[in-house]
Amino acid sequence: MITCYDIIKTLVRTEKGTDLEKSRQYLFEVAKNANKIEIRKAVEEIYKVKVLSVNTAVLHGKRKRVRQHLGRTPDWKKAIVTLREGQKIEVS
Image (cartoon, rainbow, N blue to C red; front, side):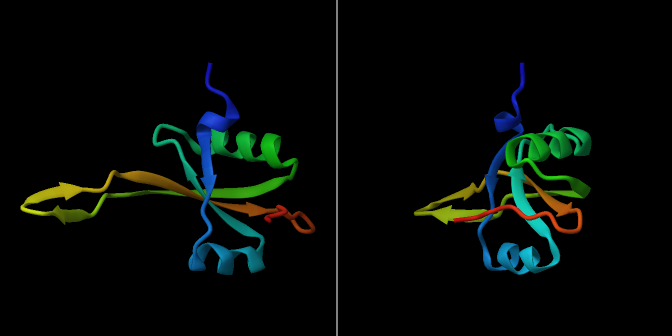
């Protein structure tokens, strides 16, 4: 059974992610096979907030060089979750 903690991996704390918080949007790294409905339910259950919308995108890994060999960073999926008016996720 997949739990909500398997769907939501982490809250992304980057410069872009913190700028989105001003407009009640939060950036999450999520499981690659999770859909928008599962992401919405998981965020509502974990953070006890009401979600207005969910936008997702799959980001492809970058090519990196490790000494003589070429490698790649893994692909990952991000979700931008917009909360309803008056809702907020407390981030420490």
